[in-house]
Length: 80
Image 1 (cartoon, helix red, strand yellow):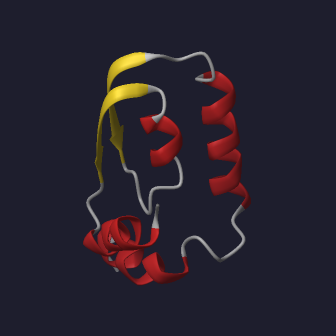
Image 2 (image 1 turned 90 degrees about the horizontal axis):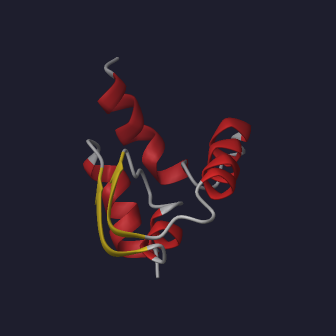
């Protein structure tokens, strides 16, 4: 199975299945970048957008991309 295919399948459960690594990454990002202010941020591998809203508050322009359309659909339609 290709990585992209696996993430396509995982997308629907991505935010609901316990995943310590995913949660640790979000905690580390917020800790390391807590003082960040920037004009532009590019978020590569944004997945379902768990960090996107937080990053958007740190800049005036955010570009968030992911190679998995199913992850982006979750992001686009279920996030505020």
